[in-house]
Figure: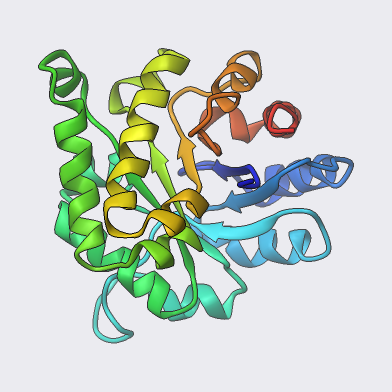
Length: 247
């Protein structure tokens, strides 16, 4: 039985004061699942210290594929590990769409994270045009193939994959449980072609306007092992309600 995992992606939000309020509220929560909080780089130390004795692990939202050196503005995985990060989001659709991250670059970042003992949450997903064109499984399969060229399924089984339909992120639209389950099942089948036992251990999360109202139905699907939560994770009570749906 795969234990559910729910990850908060705060994106470019937060302040020292609001972060402290969030963590104070979270300390009253006893989640029935594994929890990761991915804060902006500049707040990782603050949030990590506040979460240290609690029920959530620290994650970052990105990392460089490079080793430390002359890469102005980048953040090395070694730095994340030094701050106590256990997890890191890789290949979020916003990174792909706004900053030109390719499938190959995402794969390199995933491999870099794994090499440093970090657990990547590897994001895959299609645009609205790709879904309307009937290319969802083709697009997601290609994204996964690039990662599998750099990482083994056994390594991914210790990390996580997140299916996030781009058309459902921050739009209020959500893939139906059946739509999400279809893609999750396809991803697991692709993993199983290389390593069936490890594929069964791999947690595949859903991300795309998950809210307390729809989390339970999504998480009840056989191949949906939790969620990567964006906007709803900014309110501790809403995030706690989503985590509660993972019981």
